[in-house]
Length: 104
Image (cartoon, rainbow, N blue to C red; front, side, top):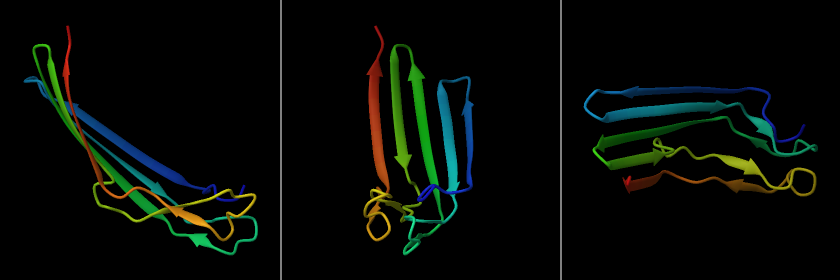
C-alpha cells in the first residue's frame, strides 16, 4: 500500500525510582517510502525520540515531556490515493508538554 512503510521499529524504556521520580523514553525508526502509487516522491526515513520525566509526591504529580527531542524533520503523504504522489506534509518539530496534577 502506498505511503505505508514496509518496516517500522520502536523501542520504549521506563524506569521508576523509589523516591517518586520516573523517567521514560521511546525511539521510533520509520523506513523511507514512496508517497503514492506513482512513486513520484520518496519520503526519507526518519527516527523520532520522545522523552519524559515525572515526579510524584503525595497527591501531586509533575510531568514534563519532550516530543521529537532531536527535532527530526519528517514528512507524511497527503491523500495517498488522490494527490499524495506529489504533495507531502511536514510533521511537528520538537515540542514540549508539562502538566501538574492533583489527585483528590
